[in-house]
Length: 361
Ligand code: AMP
Ligand code: AMP
Image 1 (spheres, rainbow, N blue to C red):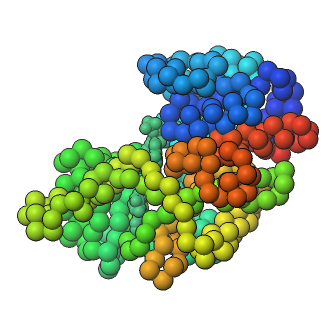
Image 2 (cartoon, protein in one colour):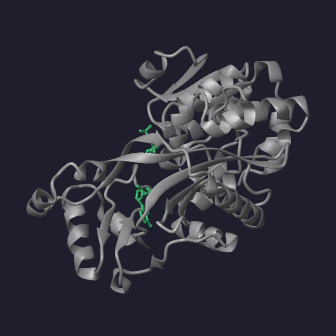
Image 3 (tube, rainbow, N blue to C red):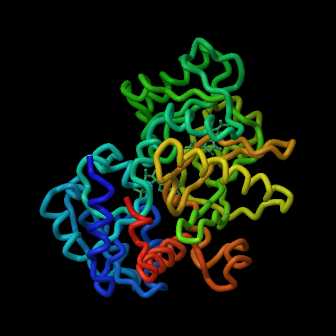
């Protein structure tokens, strides 16, 4: 297990002028690199060989570390190179998806902006449920087995790549049929089916809320919101109902992009209330709690109630809709501000105020 004190000492010994903001080349890397550049930092892209060609099309990356396999990030020589480049790592969705939070907690020595213990809370459904319940925010009912299904449910799988293989079922029989179909289509594996996450399906409008908690200012900021564009579910409405019934297509939820959402203004008090509650609970489950970006994934019902069905403890790809600014960051900052830049700004302030240790784990 990597001790926080050691990471803090590492970052405090960094040469601020030679600092690199580093992340894996995928997910929200462009957002992070642009933010770092806007705040005057050098950037480092840790990239699967071949994928650097996309990043080379933008004037954002100063250095690359090319890997054949992203798990090589944990190799001693790679870690030493990152340390010698005074790198602060910004985690995003690919860290959990391709490397795994447990391995990061155990053996990744680099300073991570954020709370690495919470990345593990994010990776386990039961831990997320415990956290959200402790926070006292409204959540969908969960089912521990398909036998218990008594209403419309959505079944998801850990490590799902952008919602691939999710399905709806309103009883056990339908559950089994759909699970078998998803297996046959290769969208899920036998292994996935051992750990299904079955949740009550909340009918309403999905909205993903992007927050930033600044430990330096002790302030929770709401920076924006998005909704996902998912294949094939978002295309189903283009098929007339009669044809849908005849073709028997099932909804799937593979995310292919995002749209910006501006919320009805009267929802904002709930937005801040949910964020504050989740932040407060995070301090109890994994001190010092959330640092920097996090996201609550919600469905807003017709009664204007936001139900939280998931939490992410790092920048989410939905923030990419607001590179430049969102209405909320414009209101707060009056200058271009977005998650990647907000992260870099906090790191810069952390160094300038001699408080960088507060921001890393
Ligand atoms: P990729 O860069 O497409 O290989 O994605 C890296 C990881 O981030 C995968 O686990 C994806 O499912 C996830 N991801 C990428 N883009 C999005 C998005 N817009 N919304 C949600 N998850 C995403
Ligand atoms: P996720 O991968 O958990 O972010 O979910 C992907 C998609 O499934 C999103 O479009 C959500 O709208 C939908 N979804 C997930 N959980 C629920 C739920 N409990 N009720 C309704 N929709 C959900």
